[in-house]
Length: 385
Ligand code: ADP
Ligand code: MG
Figure 1 (tube, protein in one colour):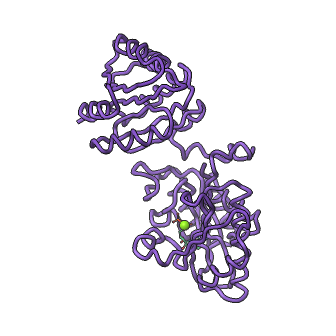
Figure 2: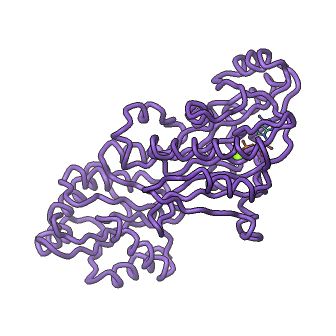
Figure 3: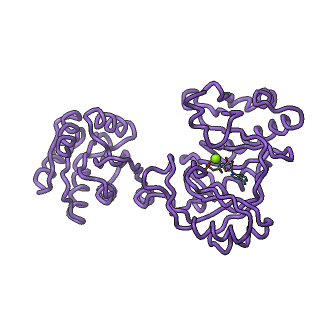
């Protein structure tokens, strides 16, 4: 789960990390008023669920309340396309107006999960800012990482070593140690899969300040934080993902034209790999999970049908706990409810497969039945070529 920069900054602040003074605004008038309170000169920042806003024109330095008003008018409702948004971009509905900070140096600092070691790791670089992605490609040695032992936690001496390697000295180095320890505490207590400060800046006045902030929460831990669901900004999420969430289905939007209904994340990955292998492009995948009933399968199928990019549907189900006849009934119910003009290829195996197959073939739907995974993938890819 993602949240906006202004929300992430509130959280960082509650962990003792300093951020620029500022306010979120929902209207241009509010932008103007906040700019006036901040003394005129300020930065107006588009709040979208993606980074790379600076280069896409989503971060504007203004010198007066009047300019802030103009920036507000031009940014509200604008669709920002950045390398992280996908080609469709994300619409701007909230703006963060904050004091313009005089920057001395910009660093990169984050804590995220290292899935290889199953531990949090801290990532830092003395060359933070808007070009961190290029740095990772062209000069990876400039990016420092440290895996954190969950039993000892991040120790001050480790943080200090890192801060020194970033080139910080004296009091600034000690401030950075405190900041890193606070950031680690934040990751743990808030169940974050990512906390990123880019840039972390040293101001002209010699302060450390989190100038940008990104936080992602671990979806599996949301139940432990009753305040998280209210933080979601639905304007930033694909509506189909929201519908899928309501039915406890996991739906992931991709760029191609083949809608995929599968059960289990492992099978989903294998299906996507196979489709790519055969030259197909998945439009999405929808995981109906282990023990879905007919209604949930029907909802899943309808969600796939609503994705305007989908030109054909590939169903790949292994019926263990899930029964193949239930899947077939769900598909038939959804198709008769909303109509399904698209070709469907079904590969099913396992419990009650014969019944499921018979139901589908007699349903009058445009269904082709596949004998095995490779056969199914080949059929759907050929059909859409
Ligand atoms: P993004 O990472 O999405 O591009 P940032 O919040 O990192 O957005 O802003 C991009 C750049 O804009 C920063 O690297 C920084 O140089 C500048 N910037 C952002 N906020 C401020 C601010 N409050 N004062 C001065 N400069 C800022
Ligand atoms: Mg940034």
